[in-house]
Image (cartoon, rainbow, N blue to C red):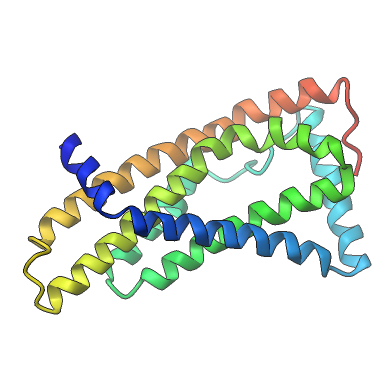
Length: 210
């Protein structure tokens, strides 16, 4: 099974490269969106994030995940792309999800840098990077496997016999989506339990006031 999955990924590296590119494009768009915000919106967002970071630093909350169940994070990050891939025509929607995830990340990073300058790097390192190391690869894996299945199923429906049985594609796509869900669950757990501790520790020495 391991060799099959490796060969499967190798043959579809272009698909995953496209997903990564869409994610990066979303990050760029998120950064640009910060620049076109009006002063009132910036102030409101800064006040909201400032209160949230202060709450986190005091130990009262988790960065980005306070009440959302970890299982729901896995469903949103891996389950929805998997279901969309099964519809065959859901590929563009999967790419849109990758774009939106990149947009949110890019917007957050650029906005923090604008408000905190060099301190934003430290905040991102302890509050965003730990869980992003799991959730971003998980999202890429989930979206890539969903699109790969969607394309393979479309080719099979069109009469292409060189794609093999659709069941094989379904099994591999499901296994990869399951692996993506595990990565996202780990990331959500880190976000809920480890990130607050790291931010609290750093906040003793550095003020993150927005």
